[in-house]
Image (tube, rainbow, N blue to C red):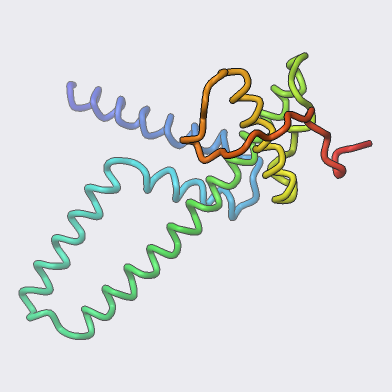
Length: 171
């Protein structure tokens, strides 16, 4: 009886994890869904345990057979391939999440009455505009705090200018 209850709880937990991933990714293309699943399952603690056990087993089997040269090169190739795949997976999922976060922050800027609307979509601005805005904000920060912030790498007394809306955002 106790085993059946534990089995049902484990099955429910597994199903809820699967449902959570499915509900978050059902609208995505098939490739994105696959990458999100790889990202999710590879970040579970059990994945680290499984990988650790596999490595220990591989070393034990390799030691038993005298570490054949073919096995060593196969292990190097496999680890390189897995590393490359995981880099792609992480870049894909974090890129999508960062884009979503930026859109949410833009919406917050749009909703706040005193916010500078010119900062929306700033991540797409050219580098010179980003540097100008950063300089203006550091100067404003220095003036608001009323103290020397040279330890932050700012030098000279820059003139405070109101932020201008970048040209690509002007209507």
